[in-house]
Length: 333
Image (cartoon, rainbow, N blue to C red; front, side, top):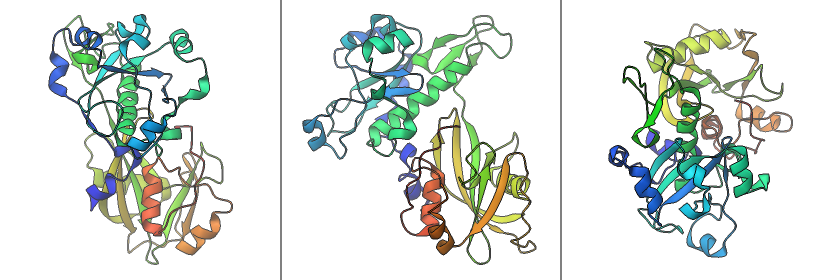
């Protein structure tokens, strides 16, 4: 059940062989650049280009929205040969313009190169904006590329001595030139929890960083030396003042804003707790409310729920038993 749920999540979809063995090939990027079949995925400030609408591409696949995957000749030479490139792997689908097996490289563009490649900023889109419109391969490519490039942006120096690190292994390793220690891409696990009470109502909270009418599930980062289930119990108590029990894993979704994986759980209010014993922490969570299905339906007139790219949206919808009214995506992390 959990895996079935996970495969429906927009950012958990993928149709790419990451081809990890090829990352160690000496001169891999020279080989890729020389191969006319290689395609480059340009990235600019966390955004990517959409391909021009093509009726032929639309009829050949389930979605008409695709990322722009460019031949080597379309990418500025300064970027093709730049140090910050990431080999993402091989395309798997057989119903896309790029043949199955096409190798794909993400390239980080600066402002000048991005403007040269595509001056219309409207064609540069963020992941939240298009996640549900992209097919499995492109949703996975966007998520993979964004996650690893965000890691590069924050790990340019050795954590031990501060020396500038060198990018190796096709963009998947940074090495310290002083002691040859390696740094690998990091992902920060977080738990996100759908809490129910004895009446099968769910608990939603409003974060201090959001509009005061935006509500979502409670979530928090897993601490060092902590099991996911223990993080569920601790985080829910810290944010709501409530003790929960029976944490049960539902599924997970990467959330590269900048570097998380959201681990979804359900939990129920402990028997020795009253639903009214709510105590928002006042710093991160400013308001908490219980909602029945009827109350959630009625609240759609004034309340903003998580956007459709999030695991929170899918978890609430799963409990609700019907599609949720669409709300604007939360742009802030």
